[in-house]
Image (cartoon, rainbow, N blue to C red; front, side, top):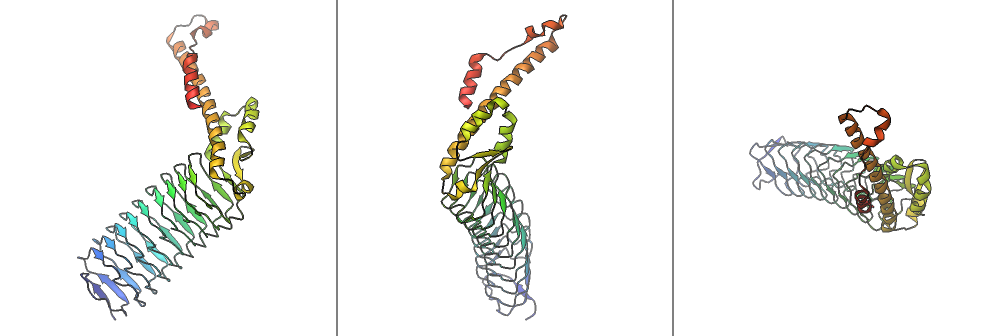
Length: 342
């Protein structure tokens, strides 16, 4: 049939519809409104639309693209699930929430840009999107739901920004093209099986603030070579001196290695089943040692700054007696600070 004008309010939609234009008064696409319309190819959504309901366009197998107006704030469960020929999705700023399985099994979807206003990615949102190659999360997202990218077999690039705190169970499981991932310093928890069966995953960048890695988070990651700690490596290198090398070696123990300037946990330790709690215990010792050295250097710099300030204020007639103007941070103060941070 020719172009169909959708007005909502329980309106019956013919199953052979090919093109749809939304009436300006529509604020919500009702649940299951266009579900299973196999010939639907073109959808023009109106400004003023706020929500797309459950399974609203599910199983529209001829639909190839969709552009959401900026007024849409929420995509409800399975809104575009099983749209097998969907290749392009444009999500504009204004969208705040993508609920469970919204784009699940959209096997032709190759890329998607998530808007800066997005705060929530629900369970299985991109489950089984086999053609999806890259994903970039905005800084507004603090948690990724369980199985959100499960089975995205072509996913090669994942960009996770600061502010992300939790990655759910099985979120990136079976993403067999993923080779490396760097997790933000704000991340606190990785769920069970999060990266399970990522056969080509080789390097994972972690931070010392991570508190929990769930069971089997890296199970069957047969190519995993190491966990690396970029920020901690930099901090350690900044305070390392020749005379402290033996101290560092003693702290590292058997879980964590240091090669050149890089700290890492070898893949053999990970695959051997060592728990994150055991690894974290070693990391905590390294962090404590680094903090001690950092504050020790900081107090020295503070003393030098005080010394320079006095020199700048005084009229020095005898430059050979500059040492008389030196000010030291009192010993008890130093010790209290060092003990607290250690």
